[in-house]
Length: 285
Ligand code: KIV
Image (cartoon, rainbow, N blue to C red; front, side, top):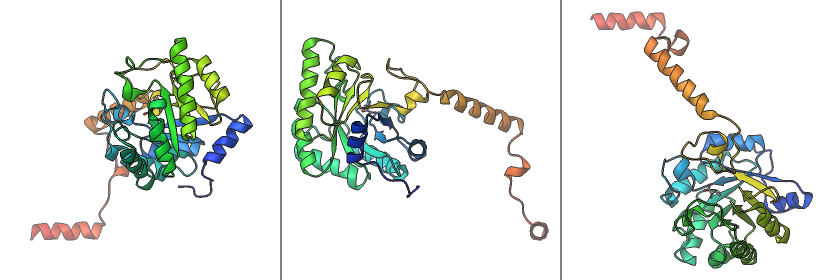
C-alpha cells in the first residue's frame, strides 16, 4: 500500500463537486482488483453486495451475508491507499431495526475498514440513515433500481419513468439528504429525473445508469471488464474483454501441461550435486 497518497475524504468529494470535477466510482470485491483501481486513481470504491452475483454465482444479491461482506470489504480496504471505500449493507442487515442497522454498519467500519456504508431505500429508510449517521458513520443512500427490493419493484428494471414515480424519487432524495446521507446513488433512473435531483441536491449525487448530469459515475467492475456473462444492463460500457484473456490463458496452460511443455527447466528447483550423490548412497544402503 502506497502510504504517500492522501485518502479521499467526504470534504474532498464535496470539493470535487464544487470544482465541477466528476467523481469516479467502481465496485471491487477483492484485494488485487482494488489495488489496481486505487493505483489507476479511482476516487471511490464500492464493495457491493453484487459480489454475491459476480463472485459467488448467485442469481440475486440477497444471499450476501454480513460475514461475506465484511471479509471482502476488509480485503478492499487493505488495498485502498487513496480511494474512499463504501461498504454495501446486505439484505436484512439494516431493515429490522435502528439498533441492528447501527451494529452492522459499525462492523463495516471497525472490521471492514470502510469509510462509509451504503443502504438501499428512500423515505422509508430515512430513519435508519439518521440513526447510523447519529452513531457517527457516514451513509450513502441508494434509490431507483434497488436490487434488494427487485421483486417489489417489478424486477431489475429502470425506475421513475412516470411523473408520479419520478416525483417520489425526487422526494426520496430530499428525505435521505435531510436524514444526513453524505451522498446519494441513483440507479437506472431517467437522465432528466437524475438531473433534477442533482440540481436540487446539496450532497454529491452519483449515478449508475442515471445519465451524465450527476456528480459522478459508478459501474460494476465485472461488467466493464467483460467478466459477468449472465446479463448486461443497458447502461454498461465494456472497457475490456478480460474473459477472453483468461480463457486463452487457461487453454494455453492446459495445452502446455498435456503436451509436456510446462513445467520447463526454469520452473523447477535443483538439488546440489553432492547432496544428490549423498541421497543416492542413502537410497542404496
Ligand atoms: O451491489 C452493488 O454493486 C450495488 C450497485 C448495483 C449500485 O449496489
